[in-house]
Image 1: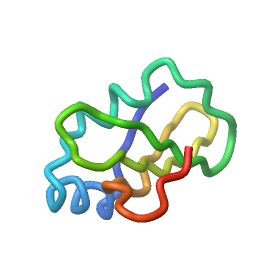
Image 2: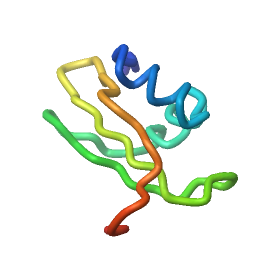
Image 3: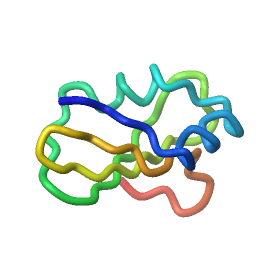
Image 4: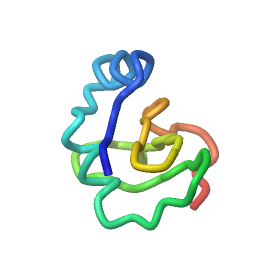
Length: 75
């Protein structure tokens, strides 16, 4: 599968110092179904868990946004 980053996701990554490599590692090995999905995961080096919203269509995973989840941690 090919992973693409929206302009918004790139800007959020730069703002919160989340590299694209971290997002790609979070997505590796995940069973992603067709449609929008949210992934929340604790990542070393960040005070809060990271939330990644992706849209899956056929062979492309589009990262819509990513940010540290500061309020109401749900897993």
